[in-house]
Length: 124
Image (cartoon, rainbow, N blue to C red; front, side):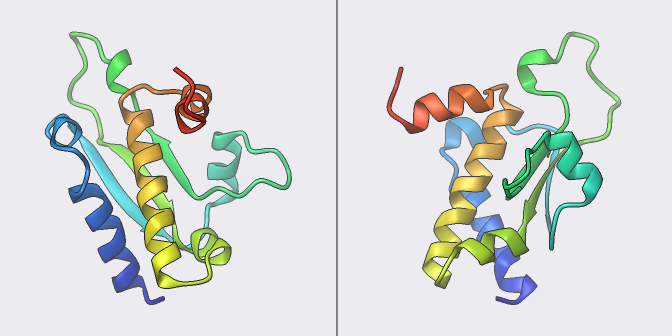
């Protein structure tokens, strides 16, 4: 898939977020890269055999105090290569982009990976 089409899928995934989340996105950039760098993989603390599909870098909203300000935007990076490698069709890529964007946006709101796993498995 060409980069422009992949960007469209990412942009659509963001704009299709529920309004309650979309209206609360503040100081955040969403970008697309081919693959994660070694530094990004380290930051994500991935063990061997794991693939990084997206990465949130920033200060979650739950940790922003009264003095939060004058900072660079948080950054969500969506990695095109690893997502395409695990998908067999454009529909699968679109669904995976949607899932990854929502996952990384959840981190922006302070939701941990452990809590996301619970939510995905239907645990409360």
